[in-house]
Amino acid sequence: MTTIPGSPRRSRVPLLRVATITWVLLISTGVVVNHVALSNLATEAGGSAQSTQVAALEARLAELSQQLEAQRQQPDMLTTTQFEIERQAIEQWASRIEQALGERLTAESLAPLHSRIEQLEARLAKAAQVAPAPTRAQKNQASRRKAAVPPFKVVGLEMRGGERFLSIQPARGASSPLTGVLRPGESEAGWRLETIEDRTAVFQNNGQVLRVVAP
Image 1 (cartoon, rainbow, N blue to C red):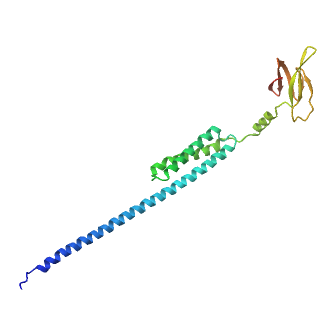
Image 2: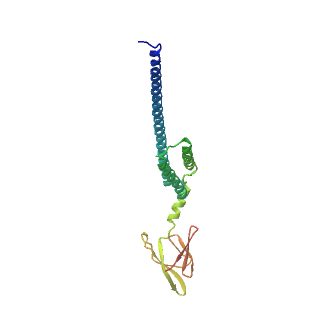
């Protein structure tokens, strides 16, 4: 039998080439799988961090809403119009946050929210500093305005000897039993009847003028 030189060597070369190609394919497949896994982990980590950031912003908005409500309960701190504007603004931003919870948020999309929160904080701080506390004089004026009500009521007009008189009776809850009539120039409980114009009685008390129409 004749043996051809070099035949075993030729059979080994294709086997080595196939083994090498298979090994390269396995390594490439492993690299691709690892890359995909790392990408998924990075995406999940980014979404978790953004969810945490959104939750923190929502908590801050809730806190600002409570502060605005507290400011509204105090006199001269915020007007009703200002309070409604701030409340509507907070509701709009809260609605936007709810819509964005299921989406990927970037730093650029969260920047306006940060800016709005800073504006609300600055406005609350300014309102707390500017709003003056009610002085004793203001309280006294308010007390006088509330107390400046006649303790009697006008019930009609009378004619006596060609002169017009004003008939009065005690107001409900008055302590003194006031009854009778008043003529222009007379006073009752600090209220002076200045004149009677047609069916309107004009009173004056400490500079305050009160016009009462007789029934």
